[in-house]
Length: 455
Image (cartoon, rainbow, N blue to C red):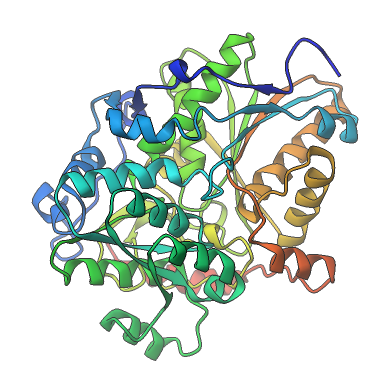
């Protein structure tokens, strides 16, 4: 093992960022605005305040300020698990026999088990500061719901979670962590909301989707006094909070004079992807550096690689504002894959714009390929990765093997955004040879895209 770079690079607590980075400030062409589904006009602060906390509305609409100060109370909470380590994957490099240098930013070293806590604590803080009673939210695989229940417990807020039904059934222990922190957890779609009843009528027996769960959470928020809705991905405010991942990554690499050639993240709604890449994207947008950015999504829900760049509803129930994004259509309900956190029909507007501009690359991978990479990583690096994060591992391994073939010594960094210790049902399916690789047919995607609103 080389003595030049330590296995783990830790920043000092004093080096933790004191502001979030807003990549929109460095985009010459800004993302298209959210629009009102009825008027097709850009949404106003007043309209968004009916759903979101006031301060989060400001952050959502801010295209100009490069840095947003992190309140001290949030930084104090961050100190419990941040700065998080940047790890040199020496053992994976050796296993692959590659000249590539591989690093990963590990975000699973907190009780929620993922990067989601970075935004959850911020959103709970602003809800408490506004004097609210509680919040509603959705969760796919359960990482966001776990993080939000922890954050609400810290600030003594009520937390109502709508959990995608297939994950609710596949991952009961993550559900119980949420309940341990005081949250109520409802499988979605449910009969407790009007939109849930409508979805179940139109799709009887459905395993649910993030789009369905979002609709139920928003309906509950706007019909319950003293509550607002919070979201774990997709929104610009979430990418803002998650930028702390990339800022720490860049600061750690700068300490040792390391410049990555390739930056890789798994792609669902865009929170970890944008968080890891944001400061590097800023350098690229300002013309200060050149990188390859790779988004990796499941073949069962390929919004970037097979979707359309268009205005679409952010939720299946069509009660949220519309966003210009890469989408498969809000009516598209993905198969019940084990990477539940990536089962969203669309992609964050910022990342969608950058992808459309050719700044980001994207690829899709099948479930069994993902778990093959996850198992290899676990055996040599000693950490069991979440299925979502393992999409990034798959691409990192593939890029490292290309370096082996060409002899190039490229530097690769990817986001290991969570642990997989509550995902053993998925690992069991993989080990027993019962995991299926569902890839939607062109006709299925075309049918969903045909229903996109005509804007």
